[in-house]
Picture 1 (cartoon, rainbow, N blue to C red):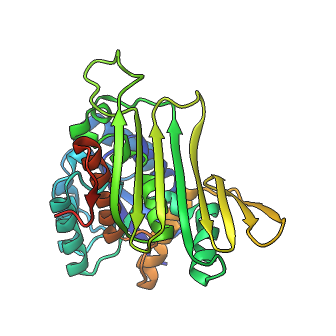
Picture 2: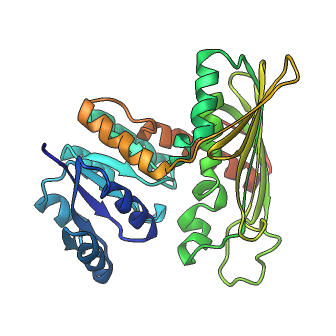
Length: 329
């Protein structure tokens, strides 16, 4: 069986997460790593096999790749997607795909023009709670959606680039984007968003420019209403990815990515369902399936652009104090 040859751009911690899963998939062979820090690329090469590069252009030119994994911070994204697409290389890119809509739509255009498969790293779509909720909504069993509320709370402060809003986009754009994506996934596109943000807790950290508390309210084009709150000052050792959706037939409550409580609106009945899942592994398998079978991934790059637009609109509202209507112009 011919194996799909994978190259990786960026050899940080998230790349390590993906590489460990890719190595367990029989249809994959990881052949190269690229990082501007030579030692990082060489370390990955020694640990996982494959050649090391300091320039990803050289990697794309010298290696016969089927798939490229783009695992660099959003501020560092340039034309990796465009060049890979032109070469016919299928693309995985971590979220957020960009920090501006101009760049995001250029990526979408390049991918869709070339016909390569694309996947954005919204791994929480592969959690049991999201998959079950999507199934209930799409089948019609849940009925119409009226209200969706989410919480992304953690006690976390990333490295220097993550703390700089100009490089990361802030918590809403870079981190709690997973929750913004999930509610978009369930409820459809957003019409208008209004939000607030502030920095209350991490006030003694030099060069910190991102928010540590935020809240948004929004209306979906369907007429449903939504709200998301986020903080980087949550309970220590806790990572809350929670949401509640009120539908015609159920109140659906995700305790976490893999646990869903279903409360009937018709009778006194509660069903708690869960399934332990490795969402990163399922994400990788979804991309491999799409490439081998010429199918779409669950998280194509156009979806990545739309979720980015949602979070950028939320941040714009937080900065201006005014409601922002989508799409952004």
